[in-house]
Length: 332
Image (cartoon, rainbow, N blue to C red; front, top):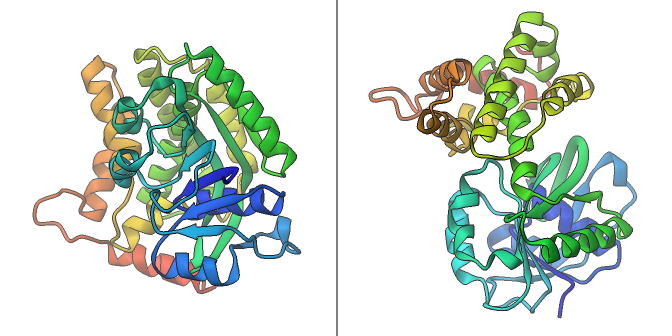
Protein backbone atom coordinates (compact mmCIF):
# COMPACT_ATOMS: atom_id res chain seq x y z
CA UNK A 1 0.00 0.00 0.00
CA UNK A 2 1.18 3.52 -0.84
CA UNK A 3 0.79 6.54 1.45
CA UNK A 4 -0.64 8.61 -1.40
CA UNK A 5 -1.51 8.09 -5.06
CA UNK A 6 -1.27 11.08 -7.41
CA UNK A 7 -3.24 10.99 -10.64
CA UNK A 8 -1.65 13.48 -13.02
CA UNK A 9 1.92 14.31 -11.91
CA UNK A 10 2.12 17.55 -13.88
CA UNK A 11 3.12 20.95 -12.53
CA UNK A 12 0.83 20.68 -9.50
CA UNK A 13 0.62 16.93 -8.93
CA UNK A 14 4.25 16.31 -9.83
CA UNK A 15 5.54 18.83 -7.31
CA UNK A 16 3.36 17.28 -4.60
CA UNK A 17 4.47 13.75 -5.45
CA UNK A 18 8.17 14.65 -5.56
CA UNK A 19 8.21 16.59 -2.29
CA UNK A 20 6.26 13.95 -0.38
CA UNK A 21 8.49 11.17 -1.72
CA UNK A 22 11.61 13.16 -0.84
CA UNK A 23 10.08 13.59 2.62
CA UNK A 24 9.88 9.85 3.18
CA UNK A 25 6.35 8.95 2.08
CA UNK A 26 5.57 6.04 -0.23
CA UNK A 27 4.13 7.72 -3.33
CA UNK A 28 2.51 6.19 -6.41
CA UNK A 29 1.69 8.19 -9.54
CA UNK A 30 -0.62 7.46 -12.44
CA UNK A 31 1.04 8.67 -15.64
CA UNK A 32 1.42 7.48 -19.21
CA UNK A 33 3.45 8.39 -22.26
CA UNK A 34 6.90 9.93 -22.29
CA UNK A 35 6.39 11.64 -18.92
CA UNK A 36 5.48 8.40 -17.16
CA UNK A 37 8.30 6.50 -18.84
CA UNK A 38 10.86 9.13 -17.82
CA UNK A 39 9.66 9.10 -14.20
CA UNK A 40 9.86 5.31 -14.06
CA UNK A 41 13.33 5.37 -15.56
CA UNK A 42 15.03 8.22 -13.70
CA UNK A 43 12.68 9.43 -10.98
CA UNK A 44 10.68 12.63 -10.74
CA UNK A 45 12.97 15.68 -10.90
CA UNK A 46 12.21 19.12 -9.51
CA UNK A 47 13.90 22.12 -11.10
CA UNK A 48 13.28 24.48 -8.21
CA UNK A 49 15.65 27.09 -6.75
CA UNK A 50 14.35 26.22 -3.30
CA UNK A 51 15.30 22.55 -3.77
CA UNK A 52 18.36 22.78 -5.97
CA UNK A 53 20.19 19.99 -4.13
CA UNK A 54 17.30 17.51 -4.04
CA UNK A 55 17.83 14.18 -5.79
CA UNK A 56 15.13 12.88 -8.17
CA UNK A 57 12.20 11.49 -6.21
CA UNK A 58 11.61 7.78 -6.48
CA UNK A 59 7.93 7.02 -6.98
CA UNK A 60 6.15 4.02 -8.46
CA UNK A 61 4.55 4.66 -11.85
CA UNK A 62 1.31 3.05 -13.02
CA UNK A 63 -0.66 3.35 -16.25
CA UNK A 64 -4.07 3.54 -14.56
CA UNK A 65 -5.80 3.60 -11.21
CA UNK A 66 -6.62 -0.07 -11.66
CA UNK A 67 -2.88 -0.82 -11.73
CA UNK A 68 -1.97 1.48 -8.83
CA UNK A 69 -1.67 0.16 -5.27
CA UNK A 70 -4.37 1.10 -2.74
CA UNK A 71 -3.73 4.31 -0.83
CA UNK A 72 -5.59 6.16 1.94
CA UNK A 73 -5.37 9.38 -0.11
CA UNK A 74 -5.85 9.79 -3.86
CA UNK A 75 -4.93 13.20 -5.30
CA UNK A 76 -6.66 14.14 -8.55
CA UNK A 77 -4.37 16.68 -10.21
CA UNK A 78 -5.70 16.42 -13.75
CA UNK A 79 -7.34 19.16 -15.82
CA UNK A 80 -11.06 19.69 -15.35
CA UNK A 81 -11.79 18.21 -18.76
CA UNK A 82 -10.22 14.90 -17.68
CA UNK A 83 -11.85 14.77 -14.24
CA UNK A 84 -15.07 12.88 -15.16
CA UNK A 85 -13.15 9.94 -16.63
CA UNK A 86 -10.81 9.75 -13.63
CA UNK A 87 -13.67 9.93 -11.11
CA UNK A 88 -15.39 7.06 -12.92
CA UNK A 89 -12.27 4.93 -12.38
CA UNK A 90 -11.98 5.55 -8.63
CA UNK A 91 -12.28 2.38 -6.52
CA UNK A 92 -15.24 2.14 -4.18
CA UNK A 93 -13.40 2.26 -0.86
CA UNK A 94 -12.94 4.72 1.99
CA UNK A 95 -9.89 6.47 0.55
CA UNK A 96 -9.96 10.25 0.81
CA UNK A 97 -10.13 11.89 -2.61
CA UNK A 98 -8.47 15.30 -2.94
CA UNK A 99 -9.29 17.21 -6.14
CA UNK A 100 -7.04 20.20 -6.90
CA UNK A 101 -8.49 21.78 -10.05
CA UNK A 102 -8.72 25.46 -10.93
CA UNK A 103 -12.13 27.09 -10.96
CA UNK A 104 -15.32 25.87 -9.29
CA UNK A 105 -17.24 24.10 -12.07
CA UNK A 106 -16.06 20.69 -10.84
CA UNK A 107 -17.54 21.23 -7.37
CA UNK A 108 -21.05 20.51 -8.65
CA UNK A 109 -19.87 18.30 -11.50
CA UNK A 110 -18.33 14.82 -11.37
CA UNK A 111 -17.29 15.12 -7.72
CA UNK A 112 -20.95 15.32 -6.73
CA UNK A 113 -21.32 11.63 -7.63
CA UNK A 114 -18.93 10.59 -4.86
CA UNK A 115 -19.69 10.04 -1.19
CA UNK A 116 -19.32 13.48 0.39
CA UNK A 117 -17.68 11.96 3.46
CA UNK A 118 -14.52 11.24 1.43
CA UNK A 119 -14.18 14.26 -0.89
CA UNK A 120 -11.73 17.08 -0.25
CA UNK A 121 -11.25 19.93 -2.71
CA UNK A 122 -8.49 22.47 -2.77
CA UNK A 123 -6.29 24.94 -4.55
CA UNK A 124 -2.56 25.20 -5.10
CA UNK A 125 -0.52 28.39 -5.11
CA UNK A 126 2.46 27.61 -7.30
CA UNK A 127 3.83 28.57 -10.73
CA UNK A 128 5.05 25.28 -12.18
CA UNK A 129 4.88 23.13 -15.30
CA UNK A 130 6.36 20.02 -16.93
CA UNK A 131 9.67 21.27 -18.32
CA UNK A 132 10.42 17.98 -20.06
CA UNK A 133 9.39 14.36 -19.49
CA UNK A 134 10.21 13.47 -15.89
CA UNK A 135 10.98 17.05 -14.79
CA UNK A 136 8.84 19.74 -13.10
CA UNK A 137 10.06 23.34 -13.24
CA UNK A 138 8.93 25.65 -10.45
CA UNK A 139 8.95 29.34 -11.38
CA UNK A 140 7.70 30.73 -8.10
CA UNK A 141 4.77 31.11 -5.76
CA UNK A 142 4.42 30.11 -2.10
CA UNK A 143 4.07 26.42 -3.08
CA UNK A 144 1.03 26.16 -0.80
CA UNK A 145 -1.58 23.37 -0.95
CA UNK A 146 -4.90 24.31 0.72
CA UNK A 147 -7.88 21.99 0.97
CA UNK A 148 -11.03 21.16 2.90
CA UNK A 149 -14.28 19.17 2.64
CA UNK A 150 -16.45 19.70 -0.42
CA UNK A 151 -19.35 19.53 2.03
CA UNK A 152 -18.51 21.75 5.04
CA UNK A 153 -20.96 19.74 7.17
CA UNK A 154 -18.55 16.78 7.09
CA UNK A 155 -16.86 17.45 10.43
CA UNK A 156 -15.07 14.09 10.63
CA UNK A 157 -13.60 14.65 7.18
CA UNK A 158 -12.42 18.10 8.29
CA UNK A 159 -10.47 16.40 11.10
CA UNK A 160 -8.92 14.02 8.57
CA UNK A 161 -7.94 17.04 6.49
CA UNK A 162 -6.20 18.56 9.50
CA UNK A 163 -4.29 15.31 10.06
CA UNK A 164 -3.36 15.11 6.39
CA UNK A 165 -2.05 18.67 6.33
CA UNK A 166 0.02 18.01 9.45
CA UNK A 167 1.57 14.88 7.95
CA UNK A 168 2.33 16.58 4.63
CA UNK A 169 3.88 19.56 6.39
CA UNK A 170 6.11 17.18 8.34
CA UNK A 171 7.22 15.69 5.01
CA UNK A 172 8.12 19.13 3.66
CA UNK A 173 5.01 20.09 1.66
CA UNK A 174 3.48 23.41 2.73
CA UNK A 175 -0.14 22.50 3.43
CA UNK A 176 -3.15 24.01 5.18
CA UNK A 177 -6.59 22.58 5.93
CA UNK A 178 -9.80 24.61 5.94
CA UNK A 179 -13.27 23.69 7.15
CA UNK A 180 -14.84 24.60 3.78
CA UNK A 181 -13.14 23.44 0.59
CA UNK A 182 -15.57 25.43 -1.54
CA UNK A 183 -14.30 28.64 0.07
CA UNK A 184 -10.73 27.58 -0.66
CA UNK A 185 -11.55 27.16 -4.36
CA UNK A 186 -13.50 30.42 -4.63
CA UNK A 187 -10.76 32.39 -2.90
CA UNK A 188 -8.23 31.06 -5.41
CA UNK A 189 -10.60 31.91 -8.25
CA UNK A 190 -10.88 35.48 -6.93
CA UNK A 191 -7.14 35.75 -7.65
CA UNK A 192 -6.77 33.53 -10.68
CA UNK A 193 -9.64 34.74 -12.86
CA UNK A 194 -8.56 38.43 -12.79
CA UNK A 195 -4.82 37.79 -12.99
CA UNK A 196 -5.02 35.19 -15.74
CA UNK A 197 -7.46 37.16 -17.85
CA UNK A 198 -5.60 40.46 -17.65
CA UNK A 199 -2.20 38.98 -18.46
CA UNK A 200 -3.76 37.07 -21.35
CA UNK A 201 -5.72 40.02 -22.71
CA UNK A 202 -2.85 42.51 -22.50
CA UNK A 203 0.04 40.08 -23.17
CA UNK A 204 1.86 41.89 -20.35
CA UNK A 205 3.66 40.63 -17.26
CA UNK A 206 2.39 40.97 -13.71
CA UNK A 207 5.04 43.62 -13.07
CA UNK A 208 3.86 45.69 -16.02
CA UNK A 209 0.22 45.46 -14.94
CA UNK A 210 0.90 46.71 -11.43
CA UNK A 211 2.85 49.71 -12.72
CA UNK A 212 -0.38 51.18 -14.12
CA UNK A 213 -2.79 52.36 -11.38
CA UNK A 214 -5.77 52.18 -13.71
CA UNK A 215 -5.02 48.53 -14.42
CA UNK A 216 -4.74 47.72 -10.73
CA UNK A 217 -8.10 49.43 -10.17
CA UNK A 218 -9.54 47.14 -12.84
CA UNK A 219 -7.90 44.17 -11.16
CA UNK A 220 -9.59 45.03 -7.85
CA UNK A 221 -12.95 45.41 -9.57
CA UNK A 222 -12.59 41.97 -11.12
CA UNK A 223 -11.72 40.42 -7.74
CA UNK A 224 -14.75 42.07 -6.16
CA UNK A 225 -17.02 40.79 -8.92
CA UNK A 226 -15.82 37.18 -8.52
CA UNK A 227 -16.39 37.47 -4.77
CA UNK A 228 -19.94 38.73 -5.39
CA UNK A 229 -20.72 35.56 -7.36
CA UNK A 230 -19.27 33.42 -4.57
CA UNK A 231 -21.54 35.15 -2.05
CA UNK A 232 -24.52 34.53 -4.31
CA UNK A 233 -23.68 30.82 -4.03
CA UNK A 234 -23.62 31.10 -0.22
CA UNK A 235 -19.85 30.64 -0.05
CA UNK A 236 -18.33 32.82 2.65
CA UNK A 237 -15.49 34.70 0.96
CA UNK A 238 -14.69 37.64 3.22
CA UNK A 239 -14.18 41.24 2.12
CA UNK A 240 -10.69 41.07 3.59
CA UNK A 241 -9.84 38.50 0.92
CA UNK A 242 -10.08 41.22 -1.72
CA UNK A 243 -7.55 43.42 0.09
CA UNK A 244 -5.27 40.43 0.70
CA UNK A 245 -5.27 39.48 -2.99
CA UNK A 246 -4.67 43.02 -4.25
CA UNK A 247 -1.86 43.59 -1.77
CA UNK A 248 -0.38 40.20 -2.59
CA UNK A 249 0.11 41.16 -6.24
CA UNK A 250 2.85 43.49 -5.02
CA UNK A 251 5.02 40.53 -4.02
CA UNK A 252 4.27 38.36 -7.05
CA UNK A 253 7.06 37.58 -9.52
CA UNK A 254 7.14 40.68 -11.78
CA UNK A 255 8.00 38.57 -14.83
CA UNK A 256 5.10 36.21 -14.27
CA UNK A 257 2.66 35.39 -17.06
CA UNK A 258 -0.35 33.15 -16.64
CA UNK A 259 -0.65 29.66 -18.07
CA UNK A 260 -3.89 30.91 -19.64
CA UNK A 261 -1.84 33.38 -21.70
CA UNK A 262 0.66 30.70 -22.72
CA UNK A 263 -2.08 28.31 -23.81
CA UNK A 264 -4.09 30.92 -25.72
CA UNK A 265 -1.04 32.42 -27.42
CA UNK A 266 0.12 29.01 -28.60
CA UNK A 267 -3.33 27.94 -29.81
CA UNK A 268 -3.72 25.17 -27.22
CA UNK A 269 -6.79 24.20 -25.21
CA UNK A 270 -7.09 26.66 -22.34
CA UNK A 271 -8.99 27.21 -19.11
CA UNK A 272 -10.67 30.40 -20.32
CA UNK A 273 -14.12 28.89 -19.84
CA UNK A 274 -13.17 27.40 -16.47
CA UNK A 275 -11.74 30.64 -15.11
CA UNK A 276 -13.97 33.30 -16.70
CA UNK A 277 -16.80 31.89 -18.77
CA UNK A 278 -18.15 29.78 -15.91
CA UNK A 279 -18.17 32.75 -13.50
CA UNK A 280 -19.90 35.02 -16.01
CA UNK A 281 -22.61 32.44 -16.62
CA UNK A 282 -23.11 31.87 -12.88
CA UNK A 283 -23.40 35.62 -12.36
CA UNK A 284 -26.10 35.78 -15.04
CA UNK A 285 -28.01 32.92 -13.39
CA UNK A 286 -27.98 34.71 -10.02
CA UNK A 287 -28.65 38.16 -11.42
CA UNK A 288 -25.28 39.46 -10.19
CA UNK A 289 -23.84 42.36 -12.20
CA UNK A 290 -20.28 41.65 -13.39
CA UNK A 291 -19.68 44.21 -16.15
CA UNK A 292 -15.88 44.18 -15.87
CA UNK A 293 -15.66 40.38 -15.95
CA UNK A 294 -18.06 40.21 -18.87
CA UNK A 295 -16.05 42.78 -20.85
CA UNK A 296 -12.68 41.14 -20.18
CA UNK A 297 -14.07 37.69 -21.00
CA UNK A 298 -15.54 38.91 -24.31
CA UNK A 299 -12.40 40.83 -25.25
CA UNK A 300 -10.16 37.84 -24.51
CA UNK A 301 -12.35 35.55 -26.59
CA UNK A 302 -12.21 38.02 -29.46
CA UNK A 303 -8.46 38.48 -29.31
CA UNK A 304 -7.73 34.75 -29.43
CA UNK A 305 -10.68 33.62 -31.52
CA UNK A 306 -12.24 31.45 -28.82
CA UNK A 307 -15.70 30.37 -29.99
CA UNK A 308 -15.88 33.36 -32.35
CA UNK A 309 -17.22 32.33 -35.79
CA UNK A 310 -14.73 33.09 -38.54
CA UNK A 311 -11.93 34.08 -36.18
CA UNK A 312 -8.45 32.58 -36.37
CA UNK A 313 -7.63 30.12 -33.57
CA UNK A 314 -4.58 32.00 -32.28
CA UNK A 315 -3.01 35.43 -32.08
CA UNK A 316 0.31 35.62 -33.99
CA UNK A 317 1.41 38.78 -32.18
CA UNK A 318 0.93 37.21 -28.77
CA UNK A 319 2.74 34.09 -29.97
CA UNK A 320 5.67 36.27 -31.10
CA UNK A 321 5.85 38.03 -27.71
CA UNK A 322 5.67 34.72 -25.87
CA UNK A 323 8.38 33.13 -28.02
CA UNK A 324 10.70 36.10 -27.54
CA UNK A 325 10.17 36.00 -23.78
CA UNK A 326 10.78 32.27 -23.45
CA UNK A 327 13.97 32.45 -25.53
CA UNK A 328 15.45 35.32 -23.52
CA UNK A 329 14.71 38.08 -26.00
CA UNK A 330 13.11 41.45 -25.36
CA UNK A 331 9.64 41.87 -26.84
CA UNK A 332 9.36 45.12 -28.75
